[in-house]
Image (cartoon, rainbow, N blue to C red; front, top):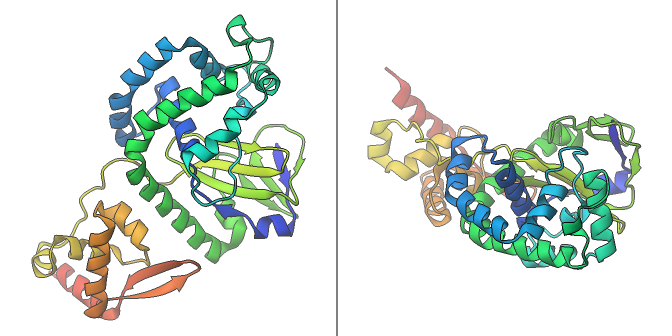
Length: 326
């Protein structure tokens, strides 16, 4: 199995972060495989796949880089230069992250692709401008197929992070790391299984460890020599439009649809980010609803780490339960 050996200091500084570049790479892989695992993903793919196909047909070198380095059929190993580890900043800009790819020495890019292919490079990839071509193609994909959808995706990813940090506070790192990707598991004694492959253990003590959610269905692991290490994992939420919340009609007439929906969702503590993702309402609207619910003492709040979580009071529970009484 693939094992990372981690000391206490590295675990103590481990963190969840967002990565526009990782989201773009995950989207690129889904587009190349034409893989959509739920209706929200299919709607997005139907909208952007024709443009992606046209761009790849116009740029065969970029297409060869991505097919060889991100969806290799033989080795199942990404070209490392295409999946740089996160810097540790919570949400860096796409352009800042892309610099790691653009600055890759040509010889290293070719060597990474040879590892992914599992053999010699085809003639189309024997050139020195592979990093620049890959970076330019990823920039176009970001602007055309990912950035317009980023606000909604960011809310889904933030909701996943908040849910996992809550699990971290309840179950520790062993619980938070369980099931990030198929095969991941904390084994104890500083051993973290990152996948089920038979790779030699890798010592990452003294480096940084970042956990990165994406909306794609499949993640990856990444590292460099600084050392920075990342685990990119599929988030728990989907991109489908939020399902209508089953709010009692009488409660909706009393409080209004939005405010009643927020109160209904507060059966368990939730952050404003989670409420935005679940309701589909703008952040400002959720904030106003919460303010009124707090003033009416139907909801209360408490701090959990850096997040503020809202929950129903006894009065709020009584109001909700009254709607369920026959």
